[in-house]
Length: 305
Image 1 (cartoon, one colour):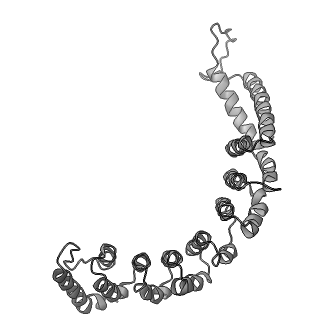
Image 2 (tube, rainbow, N blue to C red; image 1 turned 60 degrees about the vertical axis):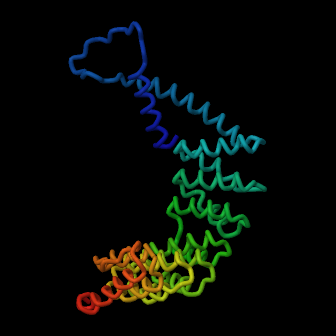
């Protein structure tokens, strides 16, 4: 029995002893050294044995359910097994990756393995991520590997060109959180050239998270992207990088998209100035505010660099 389960049983036993109701308790012999609240070790041991008996009986029933011919029964058992935090359950879950299993069973098992914290399932998860044809299964395997802290930079790199947009987006975004020298090139290339707007947005977010100021030109170029959400996330990334030199680029972007609340907000966050810009103002009033922004940049902002 693992240390974790032993400790759990001891807690259960202690609780059982403390909470046991005895309408006519037998007085214990006086003990001058006893303290209020002391528990008899023999009582704890007896309760632990009883708790272990019930646990083993319950565990045996769980094994039967995991091997049931009925998939619904197996799914419920897999979900329950992941909550036990017992290392014994992991070998019982691994067979559910084998054979002709449904998408529901594979994804449920992936999340259960991830929840256990036990690395024994990592090879099976990696195999599913690399080879399984169903995108839900692969996403579940990827999530489980992340939960187990088993995703390496090369794993993310290998997924950045995945045919599934969600998987590629997750990989590109997560790459931006890693101190990995190849991540910037991959994210910048995706931001500039990927035909999918969703991926370009994720690349902009990733570059902001990466924190590499050498990528500001890539983000500035993205302020002219055809997708408004790409433009927004590129602006937010420049703010995250605290690149004050991007002020005129944000002003030009706001000039082109004069009703953009997001662009105006990013400009204010970066410069700590709003230049009197009011998104609800007239077109003329907003353009006058942008002109004040350019003047501020020439007179004040550029001199701060």
